[in-house]
Length: 464
Picture 1 (cartoon, rainbow, N blue to C red):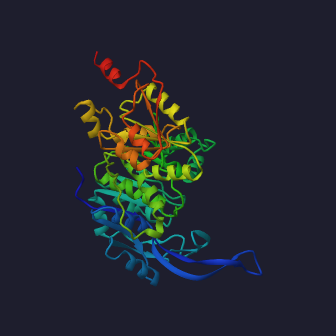
Picture 2: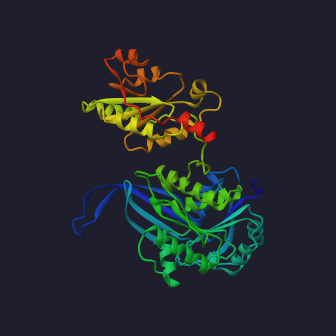
Picture 3: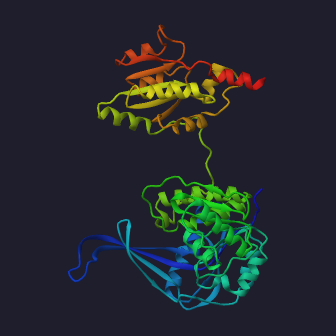
């Protein structure tokens, strides 16, 4: 059951500005591009970005506790936050930190930073201490400007009743031992581990795991999740085998803000009652989606931090594209079908042989309801989504399509393969699908059956 309180983000708020333009020539006096037609785009940065990303992903109230200076940049930051998060200001001196990226299309050319490197953090207001104490979860978004090092801030964090997620910074203070989860990226983990005498050479998982264990010993925290960009994240509790959560590959996108989105999603999941491993899995998926949808530049969009239920019927969107590509090259499209409940060596042999008949293999799989009608109420043993996922992982399967009917006639009429291959005891008999294939000149064929292997036999043996 989720706690009723807000998610509270504590840390250093920044103002991020993107100056986005075009470039078609270099300056005559230096090998640098001339950026023209510049558009200015402002957004919250640092802890403020983590807060607005979290707020866009939940109906839970999000409160940002952060030092705010008295200047025009701070006013612009307040305006960006208005109506999105509740801002609890801590008095600050030194001016608002502003990071300006000059970008040409999707590529950064240079970043220009202004503002004091460390903010003068004033006393923590009573309202701030109260919201931290009563939060459903707290995210510390440390950007090295002094907030996490302030004594009264640390005292308030030590009294937090909800789980604390700490996103560290090389110039920031050490996380408190009460933190449930600390989320350094790979470079941060390497730097801190080296400082405490653990070099752990290399980028392999063994080295990353050793660094994570070293950080847990050094900080005394509950767990460390080292974020590894496109590789996902490694979660360690300091002993035993670590958990590795792979990321879904993302092409393009802006990785700026990925760490903030990861930490925000993990904190939201913990606030909703998830255990640490579940929270990290949610965070990896959320960060990948965040990058794919535009990253920090899409900060004002609505996001979903929770994993979505998968549909019972999984239709591979790539089937049509695979068929079109093969046909464009004059190749042969092969299809086969079945329930594929408990994939066994007989299935594998048939699929491999079918793929050898042409240039691609599309597998047509009976949906769960279709299997129940054909095999009885106790089947399938594996859902259609999972059966499709296993089949797609085979190197000789190019696409999977799940159909609801009792026979694949309708899906075959849509796909129109050149060859329909069926394994089993059909030699010399007319396959039921043969008449459908004849409509466009396709050929139905029978493949040798690997005797002694069947799902029904496997089920019967398991009952003995």
